[in-house]
Length: 380
Image (tube, rainbow, N blue to C red; front, side, top):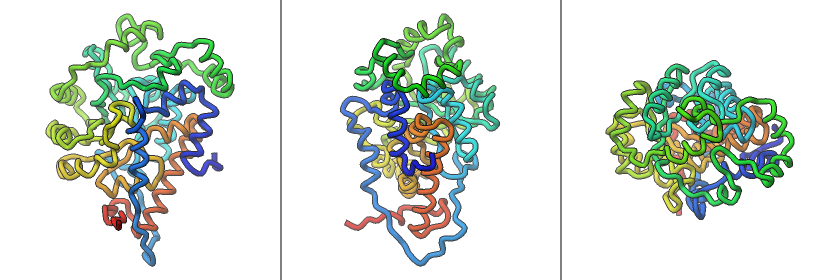
């Protein structure tokens, strides 16, 4: 893993080691993928101010996210099918995050269940909630997250209707995945992936199968999933979930200042400026371009995080400079996971931490908590 110097290096290794349908599930956006590309491109347009002859010793990336001390302003985003990038993927990613002192957030649509990840880790992780029509199931899911001592609940707001992702359709990917001769061939070309999957029992959606009436296997899961995302989800439901949860609540998927104001009105602890990694509304703004207006609108009322397009420590630095308290990464850790399991996730986090630390120093600062827009080069 040490020979991988960038997140792009890990991406190419993952491309070779993960079956195409699962790699492209993670590495795709909706429709034309214009928002997916813009998430990265708009970070690249931001330039940093180089400063010289300043004290660069005793640097610190430590900060807090929703009251939790973290080693750097970074968290691992909830991603569905993480356990299909590498066997036991959620466990491996959670362990890597725990070792480096940053939060890991488990998706509702994870392969490993809440209980399985809790049994394999020693510190509380966070849990992401999709709201389903089956409210009794949602109540049980929240109670399970409480029982696992999850430190925060992340409520995703922007997946009432699933955005169309052409790569998934062309690959014939479904939930649960169907294995045609083409899919079997893809897996056969990735023998290491297959061997690891044979060694684990975690191959279904662990938070759902066995926890929903009449959903006892992957076959019955498909029909249930197709009808369960709730198109009627509203701000009133946020209040209901906040009451049921009773702990730290983060709202993910805010991209507009008006929605940010409504989110702040709910009393949530933080919002994540996010367009779902470009996987929902194609043509929407990039997360980083949406961030400044949202900071201006509610930055004094609620903690603001960002998700989408972050591929380096410099991207994290730029996000913090524009007012984000923390940055979330999905694809970078998935690339690391696919490239080398837990060691690959650790390598991805090390790459980002090193780039963040050195870039901050070369901008003339020693403490991440002092970073602001002054480090950005506004010259024409």
